[in-house]
Every structure is written in C-alpha cells, then in structure tokens.
Image 1 (cartoon, rainbow, N blue to C red):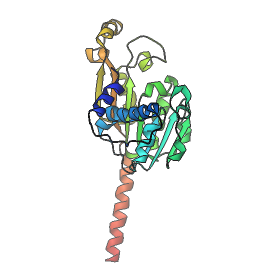
Image 2: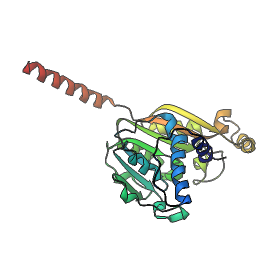
Image 3: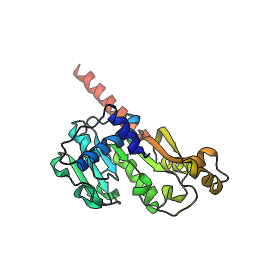
Image 4: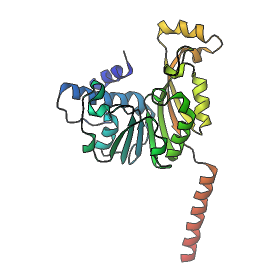
Length: 257
C-alpha cells in the first residue's frame, strides 16, 4: 500500500484534514483533491510547518491542487509551484482544473527554477520527491538556490529517496545517495536538519540492498526514503543587522523620552 493510499484510508476514517474540501465536478476530480489532502497529511503535516500567512513554493507540485488548497483555506499568502509538465491542464491523464481561479496561485512548467525566484521571498518550500524533480547535475546548485529563496528561519520539507547501489541518475536517490550522503549535501547547502523520519525498504528489496552496499550500516542500506524538516538558519551577519536595528530603535525611543 502506497503512502497516499495509507493516508487516504486514515483520512476517510475521520482524521481532521488541514486542507479544505473543494468543489468537485466528477468522481475523478474528487479523488484528485482527496489525494492532495492525503499527501499533505501523510508527508508534510507531521512536521507542523508554519503555513499561516506564508509564501509557499512547491517543487514538483504535481497537478497543483495541494498548493492551491493551502491558499483556499485562507492560510497561506501565496503559492508558487513548479512541475515538469502541466498536469493541471490534464496532461498525463490527471483531471484538469482551473488554477487561475485561485488568487495568489502561480503554477509554472520547468525544472530549472533557480533564476525565477528572488532571494529571501519564501517562508516554506515543499518537495514531495526532490531527487525526482532536481537533476543530479544541478543538485548542489539548486539546493543553494533554495536556501537563498528562504527568509531567515524559513522551513523546507522534503522527501528524498535513497539509492541501493544500482541504477543511473534517474533511479531513486540517483542510484547512490544514502542517508549519510543526503545529510552531507543538505548541511553543505547551509540547512539545519531539525527532524527526520525514515521509510524502510520492503523486505523483498532488503537482501539486494545488503549485497550492493556491503560496507554500509543497516540503517544506510535499508532506508528507502528520508522525510526531512529543514530550517534556513539566521546567519551571523543577519543577527548583527537585527541587533543593530534594535539598538537604533531603543536609542530613538530614549531621545524621544
């Protein structure tokens, strides 16, 4: 049973959803919105990100319904989504809908989004499958760009798949990225990791992973996915600027007094 299927089952049993019920026109459209709710509840909601009044960017946004729903609740301020294909227009057999009817929503086609977002303009970045969206040859540069998009204290929630020593750049985790490798590249980009959760490989796949990664630890070999809560920390120069601003305000109040 997939992640979304498990979450949808929980949702149907009465778990309170963060996202709204959308107007639907067909059973397939109903299911598409339920998938957006289920994905949020299963993948992102457990980390309790700050969505209220946030400027959100979603990388690999699928049909854009999750990003749109964050806005239609009245919680997020804006949402910008990037995807390889315009699934919201019905590509790939996904039920089409009208994102332009949602105020503050901007959906764009493209994987190389580094030059399309100004620095310091996002509060929250979501990536439901980072290694499936960002090509390996642009991984480090893209992570640096994502870090720059976030305001100090901003959050990034990502799911990354882990390689088992086989496959090429299009395989999970580019074929070779273990939990330790993912941790190193994310820390190298400047992020702090405040929480992480693992999804284990299926038993049928575990034996092959042990054979292909004989020198790795059990956790390294058997982890299929990492779900990560990242923070863009305040840098020392930013803290210095903040202190200087506070000193100026206090000095101004003292002169007025």
